[in-house]
Image 1 (cartoon, rainbow, N blue to C red):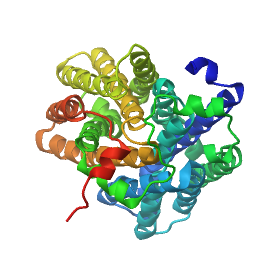
Image 2: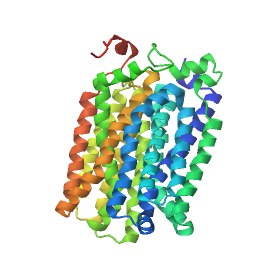
Image 3: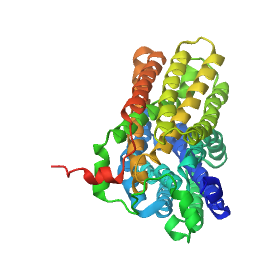
Length: 434
């Protein structure tokens, strides 16, 4: 039975609607992350906050998001994406509304922590949706499609939020984005269904599972979740994604400042220049997914088809980042940074596609969340480390070189630490920890 013949019209409709909603919710996810940065000056003035206070508020989201990954991934595998993503959307949207109503630093800090916890199920849920509804040969491009939400939300977020803030004020900017998220939550719950909730035919089930290991279970257990930490593949993914998100957050948090401080660009030109690289991130996300699928169809193993592009793209990211650090031309710097972010999103897509084939289906969101936990430890550190280096040296050059070194270490983790897929039988054979 060929994969193409077994994908029925109903499956295509389910896949397209799921991917559309994942891109929509993911874009809202990333736009919501940018609200504090856009409203920074007005918020500091209205609430009497210092620059250091704003730094604490920005980091509150990153740390809560990172540490919420571990339980949320397990919960997605246990309760499935329909429920968990609905709850996540509702929680982070409520946190956005609350952010528009705060009157003190403490209240804002709690709202930012809630935002991080609420956003945690988004990408593990997307990874599980990919595993649930797509054949292994099609999981790369599907991952690339929903992963475009990151650079797309980043590119659209600043101009959209600026318009909202200028017309309605920073408080209503938060409130309106929160309302938008609640609408998306209702749509997701009303439209999306987990596979057990659909009366699938034998042909449709064959398409979904063809190429997966035969020893599949419907539910994960805490023992299985815990045992994932005993495998080198899990740690290779965690360390590999650390470098990907470390570099992403250098650019996400500091790119406008880099263009203004290091490149002496005007504020007006900086807004345009900073949007160009993330537009290339959308292209990179799609190309990474397409490449992974092409490699699988040409006989490359499911793990190798993901880990090799992820690792090699990180090496390229390091090279283009160093080139951007030392080149004198502003136009070349924009081109090199665009190439670096293009490659970063190849890595990001291939990393998430890897989580859909590296473990049994009932642990897909769990290992994806473990990987994302490692990534956002890097994401939480990158803005601070970069800021400290720039403050000490007066230049971004060393900060970018450090980021490139981190990328190379993570590339090595993908290429040499990630090995074979983890099977249910391997997990069952492991003795319980003493």
